[in-house]
Image 1 (cartoon, one colour):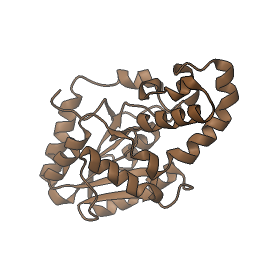
Image 2 (cartoon, one colour):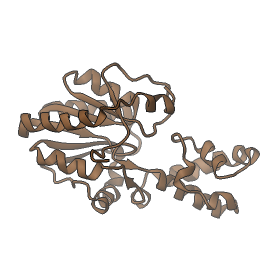
Image 3 (cartoon, rainbow, N blue to C red):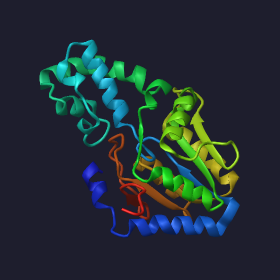
Image 4 (tube, rainbow, N blue to C red):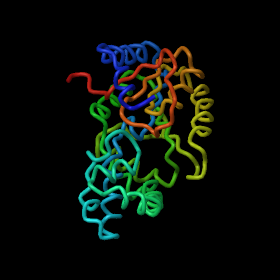
Length: 248
């Protein structure tokens, strides 16, 4: 499903859905589990993406890339699209892409760069609202343990609830090499052992669908931000929202 198609799925009453999740979590109490992805769910990583392209541009005398901003990442993780949006001509996009991709991969999955992320609108407050219900909040991310320090630092800087290894957990891949899909499916089993999964939040359609299948009684929320671009349709019952701000 294309990016714009996900946007069209957002219903006018999506804020009511988020409020109802908090109400249900409160009614379930300490046994309630709410799971949240990080990238493109609670955090906007486009500043990280833009920084990497700027640095690549500066290292390769490509002035148009050295001026790259988050707004140039328009519909997802397509680096070629972002390079064009920054003003790089097509022939240079094609010739530089392989090296730019390597340059990106060496930096994107690191603590030093993920600190540049910014919180999705309303995300920080919503995490505090979740904890205030008495429920347990679990961050379930495809980031690996080498990014823990930078991820927690970014949470602290933007006011999200911090992991405490008790009521707030941060589940990460052991290493970068693990497959994201497989890791998240393994994490589902742990979530089920922790308590009753009330809701799960993810931007990736594949991961949202996995939550829907594993926890049919839970409310599964899809963040209609961006995604990896895989042509995956959301299952019936998955609800798309644009962000977490309930008062705007």
